[in-house]
Every structure is written in structure tokens, then in C-alpha cells.
Image 1: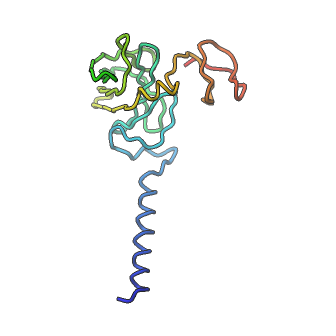
Image 2 (image 1 turned 135 degrees about the vertical axis):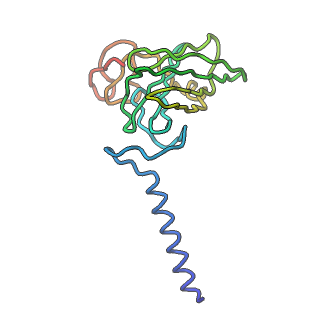
Image 3 (image 1 turned 120 degrees about the vertical axis):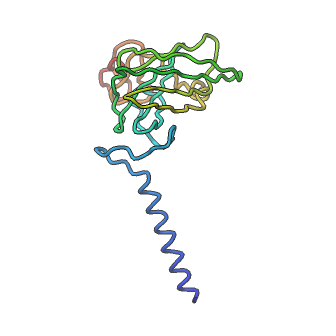
Length: 183
């Protein structure tokens, strides 16, 4: 083979590989979510200000609040689903290397588990039985998120989810001026 032919073949392989990689992570608004890997970390919207991970055909969002862990069951389009007949647990791995397991209890449109006092959660492994399916996701580096101020203890936030809009009382968003809504 001549050198120009080899270069042409190599360019075709590289071009094909980049198109297939892009196709694997395309998100179409109305289409079902095609990712199946539990805990996948590609970009997700975070409807409640937490961390979102893939769990089968669904998504799970974990939100840390003072003394609690809130878990939201999300559909393929990342809309909150009612946790009707959903049960589960969360295993908490602390920065001190200890583990504890807490039951998740329904609380309106999500599930809540109490975090033992005085611990800092590094990793949370959520296991649910929802819609006849077993779902699980692993949320890591939660202690880093807490240090960066991403732990939300507020009950109100901007409907546009502007950064810094979380508040413990109603009011207006400091960035866009919209009225804060209750979570």
C-alpha cells in the first residue's frame, strides 16, 4: 500500500470513531434515555439541586440536607416521579471509613433517610424497589460537595435554578428576580 492510501484509511477510521462516540451521548428531549449503566456520570439536569445518576431506565437524584438525605426518582426525561409503592435503603460510607444503612421513607414526591448525627457522608449507595424493578446508584465524593457549599438546607429556590438562589424563606431570586418556589 502507498502512504497516501494508508493516511486516507486512517482518517476514515478516526472520523467514524468520533461520530459513533457522539451518537452514544446524544440526548433527544422527547426520546427515552438510552443509557443503561448504573451511576453513569454524564451531564444531567438536577431538578432539585442535587446529584443525578442513571439507574436502569430511570434516574435517581440525591440531595443532602442538614441531617437528611433526600432521594428523588426521575423518569427518562428527568421529571420527578411519585414514589408510590417505592421502598429502599441508603448505605452511607463516612469520611471516617464507617458504614451505616438507613431506610428511605416516603415524604411527598421523594424519599428521605435520616443521617446519623456527627458524620460526614463520603459515598451513598441508594437501593430502591420501584415500579417492579430494582434500582441502585452510587453517589461519590459527597464530602467534597458539602465543603463546596452544595449541601442544600433551604426550602425555597428559583424556578430557573439560578446559582445562589436557595433560601429558607420565600422571596425573590437575587440573580433573575423571579419569585422563589417551595421545593
